[in-house]
Length: 525
Image (cartoon, rainbow, N blue to C red; front, side):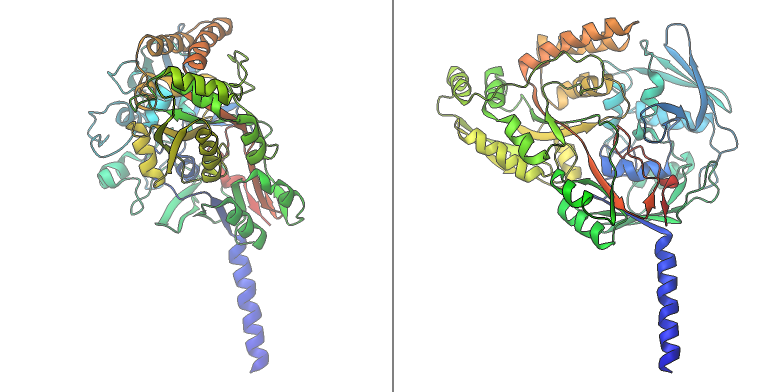
């Protein structure tokens, strides 16, 4: 009996090991907020496996490649773009993927009066990050989408954009099943419903506060996934993510603390997984509707009061460099500014000139989740407030749930806050225009007046410029206004530390981060 029991136990262990080998466990800093046009990286990484954009990125690269569209071309002035769609593809609910489905998705994102935008109940601010504004609003880009035939769709723009395919490659714009959206209504993208796309995986379950499970789409049009399922776990602490990776309860852990580099490289059971370059930035922002941040002298004083280099050296451990501009290294358009020099005496002088000789009290909101640009948000926020206190600025630290944090940021509720950005595509427009589009300059920064209006105009001109030289000229002019007016203080250009177990292959972060990495190529040996 004992011998039989032993054999049964061994058999069960073998079956358990086999099952484990088919499941990839992926640890990130939080679970999704929504799977319906999300704003945050945790949501986008999950969604990208399920709902694919028209255009993709080559593995480990920011170079564009066909995905749901096989080719595309523009008219002479790049105001019309025609996309030819992949044929014979279906959503995982059986709905055909075609030009009507593409038009349905872009219409609901672009038009707030579309019945499937659910405008009064859903936050689709991510649309404005790339396209500037919703249809009819100041600075909107997409005029209309026309179906030319079942497999051909045309985008009409309000102004020329020579890099339009890069815009639709953004991981926000995975194409969803119109049938599923119509059936679920406003609940589409929530834990009880999930999302339906054409990708290599399909949604299975979302247990709030615990995990999201995707299973392989065996009818996928491309290369089938190498694992049967992916379990995404939200683990807020980078230290805990690393500990679970070391213990083998995670296969992949992303956005680890830079302090963990030595531990990863010194462990034979782990492999470092970093991109060849990183397009990312972290910043401290000000919303100017909250006094006294309407005074440029106060914003400049904050920048001068913070020892930026010491903070970057302390918290990024060599995997970051101090930032001065909103365009990261490696992209055109950088003006070459240096960060504001640490000068608390000058900061006090500016505060006195602004009418605050003894400083003032305010709130500083820090992110509740770690990101490459802020790997230890609370600790970094505490360091910032320590420097501010030395010039008389008493900043109360506050935070809240990530989804609410993003909503409150959009509504301008934070006097001071920390946020950041990882690229959606490799172009300066995705940084400087994303931050200073008409919508964001009003909502995120509360910046009004002639300087703000001029920045909006310059960035609009850069977007439709006919040559790179002309674009760079516009970016330099906008950069000068942003640098002088300090609507936000760029803090760091980070290098993201990710790691896998040694038996994991095919995980290739690209310069855009992990939100646009398709995990169907990952193997678990």
